[in-house]
Image 1 (cartoon, helix red, strand yellow):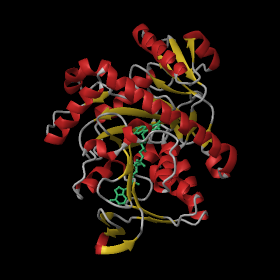
Image 2: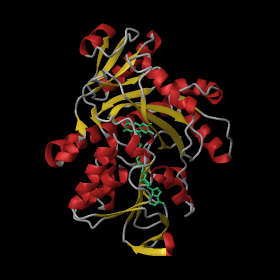
Image 3: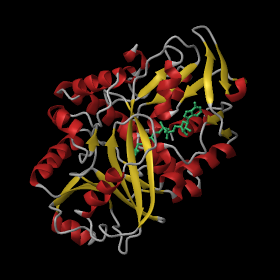
Image 4: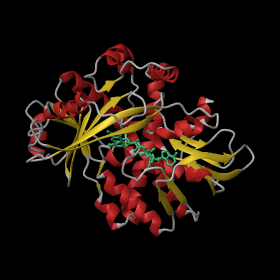
Length: 405
Ligand SMILES: Cc1cc2nc3c(=O)[nH]c(=O)nc-3n(C[C@H](O)[C@H](O)[C@H](O)COP(=O)(O)OP(=O)(O)OC[C@H]3O[C@@H](n4cnc5c(N)ncnc54)[C@H](O)[C@@H]3O)c2cc1C
């Protein structure tokens, strides 16, 4: 998503663009996520997680799970994560992400109003979403979050369970209430990706799937291009690395640190008789629920178990367990499909957007964690502005790759 939207923004500024993608376009985090464009989503590193760190390490049933697997980068990342949970750092991350969210929300809106293709519009539904809660303590936290969101310019409304069931009878009697986000946009992510790719090809981009970048040919003076498999060179005067979690390895091969951990998530598609019409996140289990033409998607869980696509049965089951507390007809619904993907997560919860240190003409855009679809447009805008040496819509210092080096 980040690469395609950046390509689109650069094409609109008259650049020639070649997109090299190691995969088929279908295996990335961008294709299988929950599909909620959620400006104002809060970072995972928050003051409550700091005290829960040990519990999370030991509890495979927790929404955020860290199996015992210690290596130096992981320990460093966890220390950074704990630091990010300090109230002052958390407040800073929320402020930056909310500013980015505001710009991105306008970006998605502008795209829908002005130049989206019919296929893109068919994958984007400005229907809003909700966060539901079944426990009073979670409801109190939701209410505090609502105050922060209003302060930062996002429209939200707190409703009780009866009002929610009046709006959508699929929600269960256990639900005490919901935080309503009318500004959220619901997507079908794989359909949206395909539509954006078709659009950039129509605008003149060349997209090559199954083409893995091995390394970049750039130093502090000039950028010449990249080396792909078979040691072939592809020339280019500007490179943007937007390779999700794999960006870390690409940067490291050049001696540059962009430390991230892959936060593995899962989705299951269910055949539900009467699917919910309003997409939601269940606050206690952190499972997202989005009804799509191919079934109801339950997406979530966050597992720090390294780069791999192993599916853990117990983690998959947690999705159905978590969502069935809030929505009727989920518990026994037949499973149509299972998927796993990795969110690229920095320890401080902020993305990495900007020039690669010590490498002329080389840029990076990654580290969007749980918000890569939401923050796609602002990322593309900031990069295009920086590449063209223009004034940026917001301060980019908090996102710079320099902060790790
Ligand atoms: C379960 C789950 C639910 C989520 N829900 C949401 C949500 O509701 N809303 C939201 O905003 N975000 C959500 N996210 C997060 C979002 O999916 C990610 O932040 C986002 O997809 C990251 O996009 P990306 O383009 O950076 O990386 P990716 O989508 O991972 O893409 C990276 C691309 O780089 C390519 N690549 C890798 N290495 C190389 C190489 N060497 N050479 C060439 N190409 C390479 C890969 O083939 C891939 O196409 C969710 C994530 C998960 C896992």
